[in-house]
Amino acid sequence: MKVIMLGTGAAFPDPDRAQSGILVKLENGAQYMFDCGAGTTHNMIRANSNPADVGVIFLTHLHHDHICDFPLFAITGWMWDRATAPIVLGPKGTKNFCDHLFEGGAFDSDFRARSNFPLRQNNLEAVRPDVREVSPGLAYEDENVRIFCDYVEHIPREISECFGVRLEAEGKVIAFSGDTAPCDNMIKLAENADVLFHECTFPESFIEFRSKSGVGTHAHTPPTDLGRIAAKAKVKSLVATHFGHFESTNQVIKNASKHHMPVDEMGPHVMDEVVRDIRRNYEGPLQMASDLLRIEV
Image (tube, rainbow, N blue to C red; front, side, top):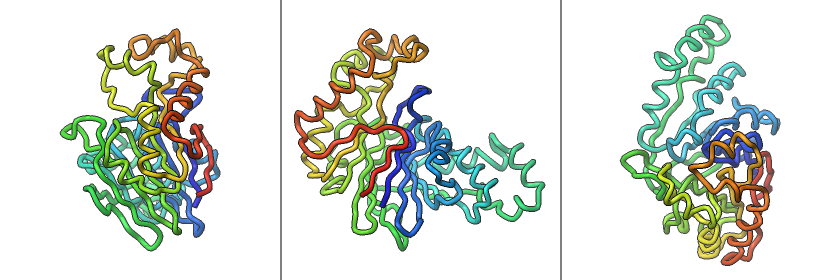
């Protein structure tokens, strides 16, 4: 099993990181994707992977930085001769999201224009996703994988259910947190995993600022807590991801961040603080994710 980090950033457009997305490639060629934030489809191509070859995509929740590349992903697969509908797993609301994209939706003119071509008429199912809204437990199973999910704690459930996931394949286990505050369900999903991919959006030193800023949720996992989660779950290795632009030196991002984080403290050096705080509670193998990082499991 190979895992490619398609996007390791958070909600801002970032010149150095695409938004959330992970691609899992099995030895037999089967491919599974988790989240589809902005830039992930472009990074898939950079990784020499074809969106048309991804059979299943799991959207952990419906925040824009986890779903907004999905139309590009689906239309690209259609143009590149995907033969069957992509299976889309996700929380309540996923069907509504997909139903308003293509035929009769936001990209209806694109659909009607391209579907005039005979070749595109032959694979219309590629833009008619097979949407399956999931609930805690076994969310999906085929001849290659079993995917389990459970609720995690990010935003109020009445706005969007948020899921963490566990994938079992080829005798290996990986877990992916989506976005979440520290929670017991994620520890259970990650139990004895070969690799845990877990969000680590803000450094400890930035979280107090966020909690008082009034610019939205701060329901994310601090580095110190991430170390505790990895240790309690007894994971074999940990990959921290979904970094909230705190290390950016881009002036546009810094100008936009004045209500979001202490701008004067931003910079690459902050990642050292994050590593140090994870290490307070976790001693195992640790990687700080970057786009296109490849991990052999």
